[in-house]
Image (cartoon, rainbow over all chains, first blue to last red; front, side):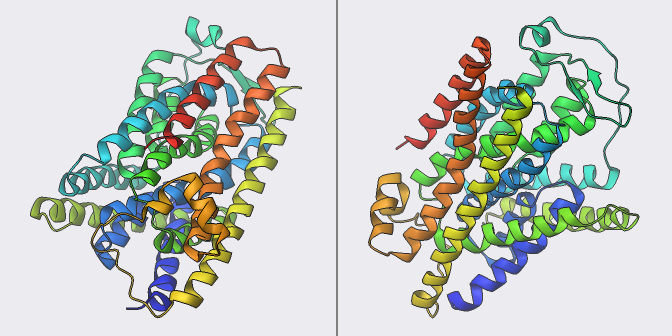
Length: 278
Length: 120
């Protein structure tokens, strides 16, 4: 296969990944890497380098729309970015020292979790209006627009959220993914931030988290221009199209299909890792 | 400067960064395919990119010599720098709001990002 054939193929695969990722809210990065490694035989290190770059593109593109709507909380974002960027540095450092077979198995496990979460949709926990003194100290409590005017919310369990964010950053740096799902869990479930604020703030943070590991990836030679080019442009194009689709009944069917595909990829990644094929 | 105004400016900054980066990557991509379209991609074995493509000065220098892959890499660098610029921008915003705590926190995040980009 020549570059003239390979590039459009990668672009197409990435566009589908970006489209499905935007529709299901999982992000495109999480399926790009297994698609590149399992279908096209790309080395997992080049794949995670290209995927990480595409994560920055979709996150920044989507965040530019969400920030304007007034849902995301830039203080929560900035405060938690200390944890995610430190985690990302640690993760990217680990990635350069972890055998690819182990990376592949960890990737498979993260995909299994994503498949499970995709099939379930997002859980809605009861919001208890309680606040942590740390939330007041760091001015994390905020408000978001609702049909009945601004709705105030309180933030709880700041330390737990902060620790979970370090973990989310580590996974992001280790696997070149946005790890948006874990970021949402940390805010929505642990810190009791409203769901819409959690998802938009998470999206806002993904770009900064990924930028922290991108520097290390770049200096280690993981970011290959010929591969990253179609991946970044494809995921970006796909996710812009996906975000424009109206959320309807079909999304539920799509969620199940997506969960199925991701589940199969997860098992393949684990098998390949165990057999030492990647 | 209010949080609302800061958020609108950040949104413009992010969009400009992504569009600009994508345009440079596309330009480099067209150039790359026109010159190296017939070659075989070799991504199944990891060798790491050449040293030139691994540092910011290296990429800028090579892009100046119309090296197509370096132009793509320059676009990718612009993309990586977009969230960094966002953090730097927030630093200015919090300073104008006279919010000392957040100036310090933002400074810390910016420091971590710069550490990563200066990594060798």
